[in-house]
Length: 373
Image (cartoon, rainbow, N blue to C red; front, side, top):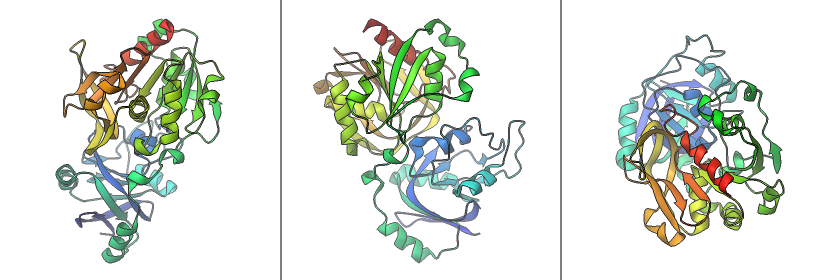
């Protein structure tokens, strides 16, 4: 047993290391999805986190290099009950173990992930240190004590576009087809404020016939408006929305100038820009099976989610916002719109399609907003 995880409350888990050799000090969360670990590993919203998979057997389909949501893995550590070292899939190009070794991402297996998940549920998400390099528990605990709290870190800076502006181009664009959107092939220009956008989002947008231009998270509002966009999209991303003051100011200056659509972190930033509040959830929402109720239609969508913060429902009214969707798990705000302005957002990931197309109409609603405007 050459790997160890120590949580902030002192709980220790001994297991077997895999992937890269090293030590990671990050927030530990659990993910309830049964599939899609390649997407999870590469999702920029997981920047600065150690992810525990509740599904006990991970790695059986390997890594294909096509399903990633960014150009490199973003998690800092992965914890599984059992890792499959010999994948079986015609799409597989490399095993999960080898992929993590190449990128220096440390993993821990052969621990009771059910007990770890229950610990996080009972005590809340907390910092932890994962090591596969044989360090003593005392040294690991000292490293954990001196590490800066994740709430204070600007994780968006680590995943945003490294240039001010870039049209979206992707080899998979030509292959991506979504029949459900075939009636929406209209010429629109959408400026994407990139807080860590997943590849699938602009890929889906281009399938609608939209011209997508990405901007870095620190781009000023004047830069976004130079392309004369029909709408501005606020992407997903990692971390605490409360420390992204520049992004909040940018969005605040845009709300009366063009239609806005936010997802995940973008949803939270939009709320802050309009005067609402956000708060940190006890252990976050991380999974592909979260039921969301649409308040107007009464329909329930199965959604994919990955976030640690939520919008305070009590603060919506003073911001001119109203809730359009709620979580059936804990009642948190999952969708909102402005009462007067062309502004809407959702907390979940409609592009991830676990339903598989339960939430696809969110993009149709944004299309109608841009057309009306």
